[in-house]
Image 1 (tube, rainbow, N blue to C red):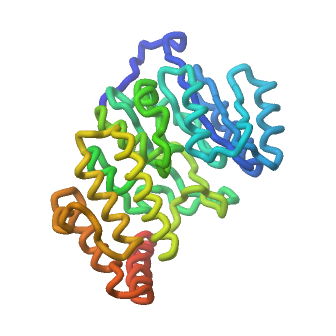
Image 2: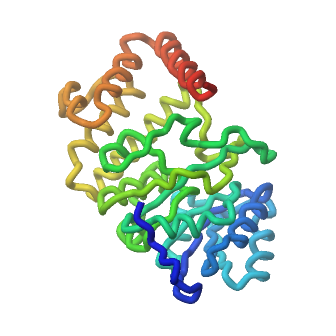
Length: 325
């Protein structure tokens, strides 16, 4: 991995790095997260936080930090816009040459920003591994990637099938933000879209060490836990709508066919039948096509919901067994 940092580089030469955060009713863990950012060993940081009309004490906590720290700036949405639009607002106001993303409930280890900056090289995005912790801060697993059996990915078509880039783990170049914003209306999550855009423009780097504590609790928007079959169907529908939004925006014309096939596969999962201008066999032309074919035949409407539920339970049970091994 190519280093972006020279040992002869003085602190005054280090570029400004922005940390973009979105908050919503996050008062339980917010102070611990912000303190961990302010304690970073990287010396030239700003924190830009967009609050999405929180109803708890989040606003008051943020205002205390803004008053106490010159490098903290706040934006308060006048209406609830959701996590994607809140991150879009925060990122758009960042002044740094590089931008790190932060959730409201995790903990950055002190070297996180410096290590990601050192190793981003010529990539548009770098992300790292995480230690999974519970709501009380107890370690659940030393590696998110090992727990989820997630593989490193590098090319655009790999990210169409699934995402391994969690927004709280990334550092991106300002150029990627300029290319990606505004986010297309209807995308599922900002982190997945940024991963696709980074692959489309150039490349992604992965730093294979945990640089943060990734908290799992009942209010996570997206977490590391497996859901039930109904959740699986809902997530498939969200994926379909997100792919459709990307196609409608025309952002990645080079991969139009691959995006259409992924969209139609996800629709087939929650609808229970294949409907596309492409033959079902065309799935075999895209990365992960064999796996998608298996999933389609397991979850197509021919079996009925009780059998599809059973198949999903068996698959998730097998995955949980692997995770605990």
